[in-house]
Structure formats: structure tokens, C-alpha cells
Length: 160
Image 1 (tube, rainbow, N blue to C red):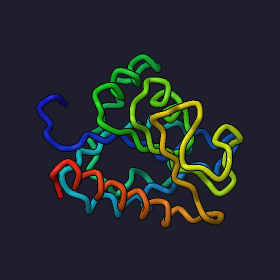
Image 2 (image 1 turned 90 degrees about the vertical axis):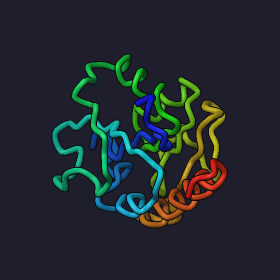
Image 3 (image 1 turned 180 degrees about the horizontal axis):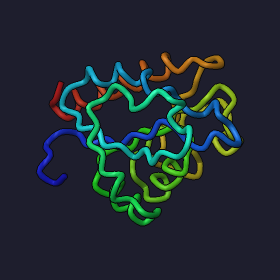
Image 4 (image 1 turned 90 degrees about the horizontal axis):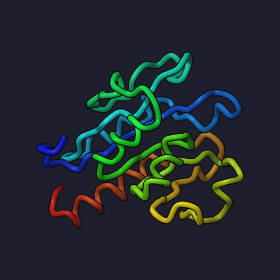
């Protein structure tokens, strides 16, 4: 990973279906992110039964090192090598936030209470940025907002 000159972004699109299946995003909805250049996408998705809702991997050119993940320590080591983590509300969000790694959290319209309401930051994780659905099921709008912010980030880094 060290020799990768691209922005290294870890991504996780699904968590356990219980207690809230609405916090996961269908993988194909992430396809617009694949159009962005100078980004290397690293999967942080450790699948469990039904985690991808039967649709498979997202339409992103993923580098998948998750076969080496045995526990949270391994996940933390992978996150430490990344520039940014993009995830739904999952253990990955909390792990990245606790490591003070920049993390963008994709939230459903009615998120878990920990994410509060009406804000795009988290009092618990200063490096977190929250992207919220404006109405139930509006993941496309969330992905569009994330893509726009990634474009801005790339422009600031001199890459387009």
C-alpha cells in the first residue's frame, strides 16, 4: 500500500442486518464513485451471511485484503494505512473514529441515536463527517454528495 500514490480509501457498505437493515447500502449504488480517478478503493467489507443483500460486490475496482482480517486489530491495522474511510453505520465507523482516522459515515434517514440529528459531525469522533439521507431510502443523493466531496478533496490534493 505504501507505494500507492492514489488516495487510499477504505469502504464498507453493509453491516449486520439486525438490528437495522436500513443502514446498509446496496453495493451497486456505489457505482458513481468508480468514475473518480486517482483513488484506490480498499474493501473493509467483511461479509457475513446476507451482508450484501445477494447483490455481490459494489461496482468499484476494489483491492480486497479482507481475507487477512481475523479480528478488530487486523482491521485497525488496515485502516491505519488508509487516507480515508467511507462506511455505513458499522463497527468500521466506530473503529476508524476511535483511531482518529478521517471517516465519512453514510447514514439512513432515521439513524442510530449515537449519530444525533441535524449535524454533519460527531461529538465523539472529531475526524468523522456524516452524510445523511434527506428522506428514507435516498442513498443515491448520499453517494452523489460523497462523490462531490471526494472531487473537492482530490482538487485540494492537486489530482482530478
